[in-house]
Amino acid sequence: MRKLICGIDEAGRGPIAGPVCAAAVVLPADFPFEILADSKKLSPIKRECSEAIIKERALFWAVGWASRREIDRINILQATLCAMKRAFWRIQAKTDEVFLVLVDGNYTIDIDVDCRSIVRGDATVAEIMAASILAKTARDRLMIQLDARYPQWGYAKHKGYPTRSHIEACRLFGPSPIQRHTFSY
Image (cartoon, rainbow, N blue to C red):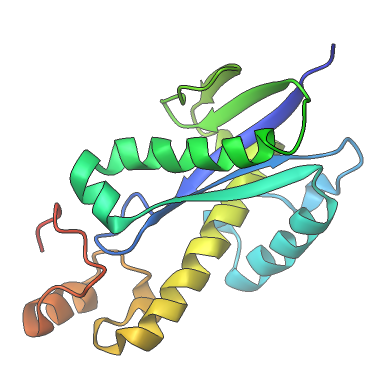
């Protein structure tokens, strides 16, 4: 039996505010692979265009989240792995297909299928590139929405990363309701 490749990647490990997001993607053989790249190397407009095509053409795709509270409770790595499992489980719930799961980075997730880590997979494996794009666009979209609720911290601009303006806002206004408390600023 042929295994489908499911690529998994995350967005939001580096920020000091907001959740971490992971995406899982299974692509068909006739996917337009030329639209894919590491999400960090695509402009926001190209990411959004690619996101629409991925969602339309992928065999399966899903997003999983781990909240700021989970990050504070179990640490960012464990929360990231939880978000990745949640994304994969959403795909697994839709089908009886057999998967080979490829995760970007040094770590695998504890699931009941063959799972391997691929260092720099977001630059070399199409399914991981697609997952990278979905995770980044989903998280960026959420941070822009959160900026409307908490405008003092400027989340639409820096997406929760520890930029100078973000750190200055935290010093001036205190931590926002979505600030990760396990990070100092």
